[in-house]
Every structure is written in C-alpha cells, then in structure tokens.
Image 1 (cartoon, protein in one colour):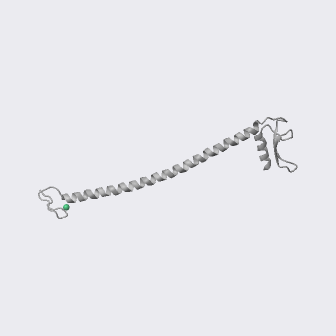
Image 2 (cartoon, protein in one colour):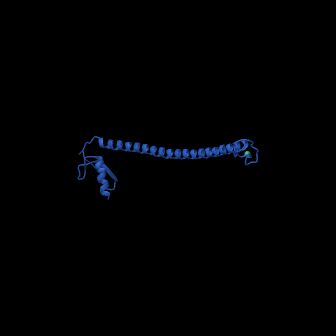
Image 3 (tube, rainbow, N blue to C red):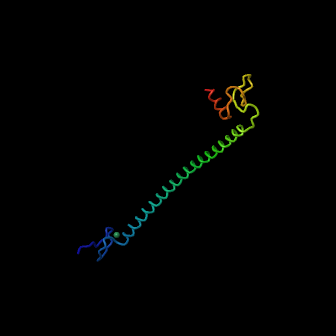
Length: 133
Ligand SMILES: [Zn+2]
C-alpha cells in the first residue's frame, strides 16, 4: 500500500494515509478563513454602498414627493382664490369679462353687459388668454 510518508513541507508523517501534516492543514484552514474574511469585508463595503445609494434615491423621492405636496397645496389655494372670485355676489349683469382698460387704467376683471362677457371668471380669463395669441 502506497502512502505519503512526508508532507510537502517536509514534516515526517509516519504510518498514515494523511497527505499533509496538521500544521499545513491549519495553514490551509487559516488561509480559507482569511479569504472568507476578505470576502465578507468586500461584501460589507458593497452592501454599505448599496444602502447609501438607496438612501440617496429615497432622498430624491422624498424631495419629489414634498414638491408634489407643495405644488398640490398651491393648486388648491389657487382654486380657492378662483372659486372666491367665481362666487362673489353678482349685482350687475352676472356676466364677467377680463380686458385691458381702453383709457390706460390697466386690466379690468369685472361684471359687464358688454359683448364678450361670459358666465364664469375662469372662462373670462381663458378668453383673455386666447385673445393674447
Ligand atoms: Zn506540512
């Protein structure tokens, strides 16, 4: 029966079927553990990087969400302002117009019986916008 008597490191093994000595086995085990440790550290760094990336993305999403909320609040406030104008008691013609003064006194948003006056403030604004094109 053929077996190795000496380990590759030169250590005498005697009558055994082992091919390497205990010291070399331990060295191999230590190397394996060190490799695992290195891999673990690399994975940890990668994981940390991924977490940081996700946190950055979350920050962006949070910023976008905050902006959307702010914008929505602004839209709601603008709607309330327009609704207020829309619901003011109408005591003249009941129809609205937005126009520039013909005598140089700036813009006029008012009830009117003149041609072009419409049922809603929104429509009056839209019509003025159309007339600008
Ligand atoms: Zn050995």
